[in-house]
Length: 112
Length: 121
Image 1: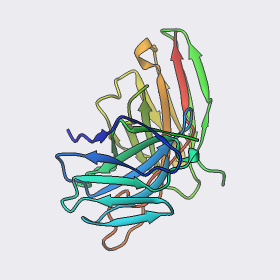
Image 2: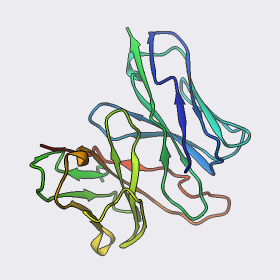
Image 3: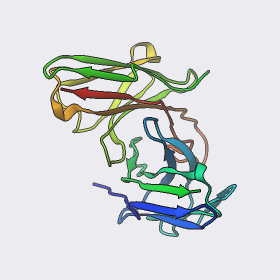
Image 4: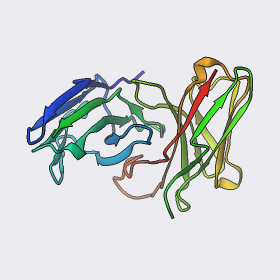
């Protein structure tokens, strides 16, 4: 069974600070996605990374996929209250399966 | 197209009753997924359809759960003889499979609906 461990589980920071959250596994994934989820809503896709070592930027968010495709990180620069939410990483093993394996998420609170 | 729609948004039912949820995916998406999410956890895979064919089922999907996608459009998820442990958010998602070189599965990601929150009392 593939597992994704996310850290930290909770993070509370002041507006304007930078932060990094992590997603780690002992398994290799063919692709990895990051989602943000707000209370009572479904997750919203932020990015998909597919190549080992890949870096993608989405405004103030920078996503990196590890060289071995077993881990990923999300870095937020100058966090804003609108960044508050649950950040989930999800991996696809490929190999004929279309299901995603999700981590438990990092709950981020950005205090004004 | 307004995205993935789920109905109802909330459902409270007594233990032992049957419930049915509906999901309308994005119209041009050929793949549809059901996930379940409990408090403090990430979504867990339940089942997946490509068009009308149910191609994968999780071991979480006991014989009390059944999902259908007639005509490859909307999907329903039915839970029979509900138990308190079935209380969760049931999420539907859809995606578009495109053939192409060096495009891995799930490359385009999912679009999730807002979910159906089930409470079994």
